[in-house]
Image 1 (cartoon, helix red, strand yellow):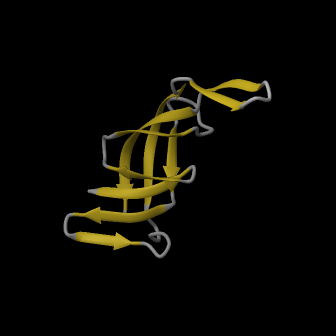
Image 2 (cartoon, rainbow, N blue to C red; image 1 turned 90 degrees about the vertical axis):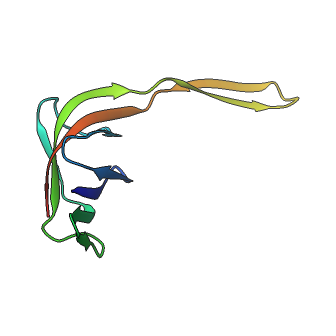
Length: 103
């Protein structure tokens, strides 16, 4: 059994018990979240494809933690103009454990 859902402008493939790194959610660690934007769901031989979403389907998950990725350096430079800008960036994400998939 699996489902493909959308959150934060990205698509994720979820299976019960799997752990996913999704864009930051406004939820406390330990709480549960529901993703209603299910694009595709499959259970055995039965496959439900949404147009654009599967009606009545949802994925529930438990929020485990919030964290940020490794720092990347954004460096801008223009030759011969003495223009240099250095900036760091760390993208935030939320770790969730998939609990139940309802089709």
